[in-house]
Each structure stands twice: as structure tokens, then as C-alpha cells.
Image (cartoon, rainbow, N blue to C red; front, side, top):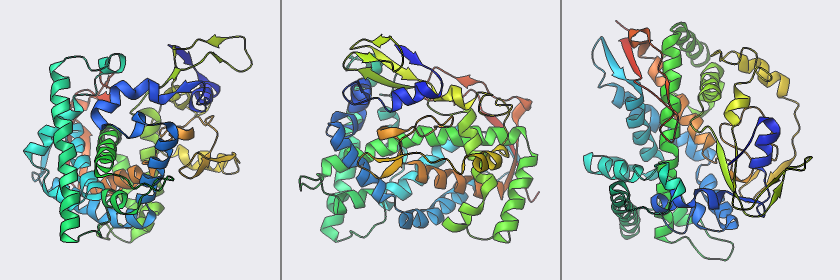
Length: 420
């Protein structure tokens, strides 16, 4: 494994030529058994770019507008369980449950959301068990967790396919969820429509890829807020100033104006990005520009964007959680004119030299970024209307580096209802 550090190292890995380094070769053994065949890293990169374009179109601004009331309602319903004046809760467990409820309601449809019972939770748990680091190194070891993973994949695939068949039989094809968009509106350049199996596998990929990243980010955000309770008052005050009251319904346009809420999410992603390093497999000898160093074929190369995000070179007092820094950061970078490139799913900045890359860069940049911000900000805005948080026993959790995502250890918080 060759590690490339700094902004130039990030750019080298994210924008490596397809002929030099491959994300598909790096991640296939880990993801294909979970996501399924014919999607994401089990297809040629050109096909993956088409699939990303399909999903990105399904996450249109029109649909994002429709999702916010759904997320707000799901959050209120979930928080109604916290019905004591004050109590202690595992915030990461809570966010994991809430994220899958909101994501399923918006992206997968009301049929999936209505079936979020214990049986589906077990299927999800077994499928999630396939994301073990050892599966990155070895293909399909005969482990008990892999057997459960494979059975869960089949059950979840049929779960989605059955919903699509039922919708066609009943004529219900007007849903705003991404699954319906993929089944109805998407066609490859070859003229072929997506099959139900491909749709199901893409939906599994969306569900699995977004679950841990968003739930982990949400949990860390609330932990940082619990460490600095004054921020709760500032967030509430921002809502009152922008929305008029804490009872006003949240909308897409009003959410965009809640800049402190946005900065809290960005600062959390800066200090606690769910994924620390990005890996590629070298498919031919790869020379590092400006040097005589050659990374040999079949080696792996990685960058660690989390390091630049925590560097004093780019962020003053970088280890400090300070959401107010983003106002100045945006002013300083507003005139940056990066070249735009369309890899097949819409134009985006070709540069990966930014010190802040929580959603990646280049052709593999995460297309779920707009939904992630909408989802997390809506949950945050709804939460602070009802509760204050403080760290349980005044202890800020350590990072758990044994998991695929960097999650908090023992993330217990004490909540208190605002109206008490």
C-alpha cells in the first residue's frame, strides 16, 4: 500500500487515470456480494457513470423539496419515543435507526418504509455484516457472516423486485422515490432499460452506502453540540430569525438559509469524516508526477483526505470544533475557478486539491451529497426545537477505528426537553 499525503496526494488518487488505477478492482470483493451483480463496482466504469447519472437525476431538486416534510415527520415521530423530561440515550444507535427510517421513506418508497419491522431490520443487519475489512482482502471466505450476508442479499433483492411488480400491476407508478425513477425513466446509451434486478441492486447500494455515513455524521454532530450546549440556543435563534418561529414548517428554501445548521454539518464532516482513506488498485506501473517513484502494478495506492481537513495549513486551530469558521472560508474561496469536467453524470470540479473532500472528488465523487445535507440538516433542525443535549458523565467519545466507518465509542448523551 502506497500512501499519498497532502492536497497533491489526494488529487493523484482521486484523479488517477483509469488505465493506471481502479476503484473497481480495489472494492469489488467487498461490495459486489452486498450490492449485487451488474451495478457499481461490478461493471465497467463507463456503465457506473451512467448509473450514477440515473441516481443523480432521481435526486432532483423537485424530489428533495418533497422529501423534507417526510424527514421532518419521521424525525418527530421517532423523537416522540423520548417522552421523559430527561433521560440518557445512545445517540449513535438513535441516529442509525432514524437515518434508515428517513432514507427508506424518501428513497425507497412508502411500501419499504411500512415494512421497516423487525424482519427487515434483521435482513439489513445480516447484509451489513458483509462489510468486514477481511472481505476487502479475500473473495468470499466461508465465514458464517458471509453466509448470512448472501441469504440477506437474495431476500432484499426480491423484496424490492416484488414492490416494482406490484406497482406495475396496480398502476401506481407516480411515486417520488428513486426506485420508481430508476424503473420508469432510465435507459442506457445502448437503448436498454434497467432491469428490475439492476434497480434492486442499485437501491441496495444506495441504502447501504448512505446508512453508515449519514448516521455516523449525525451522531458526531450531536456529540459536538452536546459538548457545547450554547450552540443549541444559537441554532434555535437562527431558526427564529430565518423562519419566524420554531413552529414554522421546514422547506427546501428555508433550510438553505440556515447557514449555521449547514456549518455544523460541514464542521462535523471536517473533523469526523466517516471514511478516512480512499483506495485504488494499480493496474499498470504508475509514475508519481514530478518524481522518479513508480508504484508497481498490483500494488494499492491510497490518500487520506481527513489529514488535510485537520491541518493547520488550511484551517486555523484545526483541531477545534468551530462551525463559525465556514463563513470566512467561503468568502476566501468564492472566486476559486476550478476546471469543470463531466464524467458522465454532470459537470463538477476536476480538482481534488481542496482540503475539504468529505464526499470525494473526480469520477467517483458521491452523488448523494445533496440528499445527505437535506437529510441531516432536517433532522438537526427538528431535533433542536425539542431537546437540549449534554454529554453523559461529561465524556466525549473516542473514535472506534475497528469498524469500516469511524464511529464513536459509547456515545451516550443526556437529553432534556426544551419546554421543561
